[in-house]
Length: 198
Length: 235
Image (cartoon, rainbow over all chains, first blue to last red; front, side):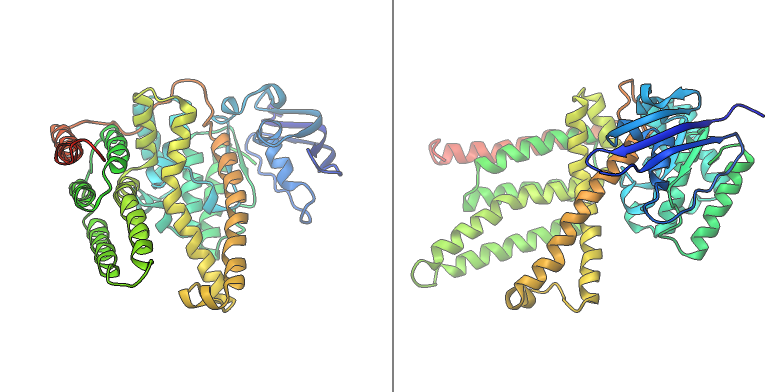
């Protein structure tokens, strides 16, 4: 079996200011091309686990972590978030609060700009992304004009353009209607076919 | 239409901020407002400019009409009018700025101007605030209407407690969660990368931009100088 892109070994985690552990002794390995779905009751730690997978824990959310977690070969505790950001693409639950930009084009290229990719490469990936995800109709728009489903597709496009090793989606469909969920499913199938995972 | 290069827009913002507080009397303050109207007009914000010009005229008219009122009322209205008039040029320009500037261009412009990153980020988030606040307010207003409380002037006076609760509490809660979610999303996409940042769009200063900025800067400073000459330097 190929090397795993995400390895979590016996991790216990507690947010600062909380009395209970959010995760207790969890282990998990995800391999290229695998799509893993986390299910469970509200508050059982699904989101916390995704935050470990994208490195927001321990660098953004503060708390105490025991155990080991490796993302694409990087130990998350010693890796700053900007090293992980080209490797891990994250789409969050709320389409309204994950956009830094006010127009869709800037949003799609935002991650690439931060990573310092040359302009030509950005243009190539931008064109490729909009074609593969079939979102030409969403280009050059104001994000405040878009529906929740359209916003989520733009978020996916921003992630896709980064060509990450690992995709982390935290309840991406919870605010969407059936049609938008279908688009999201197609996106996941496309990502899976390219051996991008989670 | 492309409004103007972002670097020039920032320069004008600084000049307007300074001059708007140097002249605020009826004649010269209005002259300054007129200059700002010309600027936003040149930036292609025709509708916005007209809206603000009309509001400005209305405020002027009301404060003049209030002079006929008895007792201390004219004074109060004059004060109120002055406060509103003083901020209108700034507000108009800020709205036009926000409407014509994409966040990525703004970040790129400040990067080129060697503005320190934390300052650039703070400024960017401030510009981004207007459209986002509007979107949130629209949602909250819908939610309030659903509960049978409309956000109207009448309700503000007759049931202030209910309106307060229905509007302010969600605003505070949303502000807290949005800032956290937005920061998480930005961090996960590498915003705190200390290395060089590139930009997708290329910023270009055209001759038209330069000509406009020189013209408008002269106009704004001219109003201040004119006032100083006419009134013998006292403000």
